[in-house]
Image (cartoon, rainbow, N blue to C red; front, side, top):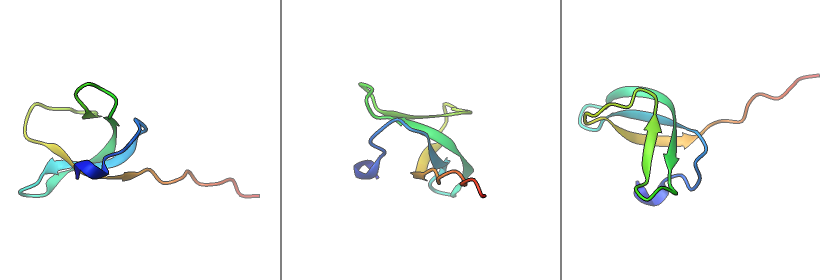
Length: 66
C-alpha cells in the first residue's frame, strides 16, 4: 500500500480499522507525506492497533443545477 499513498496532504476518504477482522469506521483523513515521519492523521486517533487500511480521493462536490 505504501507505493500508492497520497502524494499531497489533501483530505481523502479512509477506512480505519483492524486488518484481521475488518472492523472499523470510515472518516476523512490526511496523509502527511512531507513530514520527517510520514503518517495518517484522523479524528479520534487512538494509541491502539487501528490503522488506515484503505483510502480513496474524495468525490467532487455536486454541481449547481440551473
